[in-house]
Length: 78
Image (cartoon, rainbow, N blue to C red; front, side, top):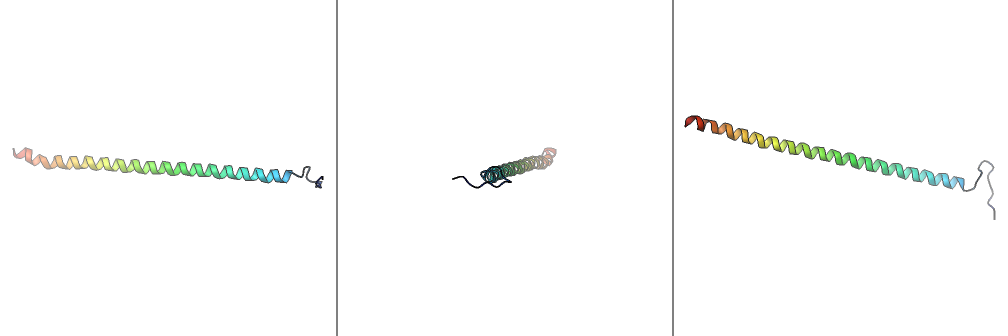
């Protein structure tokens, strides 16, 4: 029941192990790329959200400054 052995290959199981190792390495590489891509997308979305928050805060400040500048003529008149 011995399988014929190719003289170039020492073990008949070696090609299967190499193929399986290649699949495992490929899956690991894909997982790393997916996790890095997800992390980059998450970081980008966080920066966009923070930028939007800053714009909103500046809009609030500009509104207050406009309201104060509109009140100056009332103070001068009194």
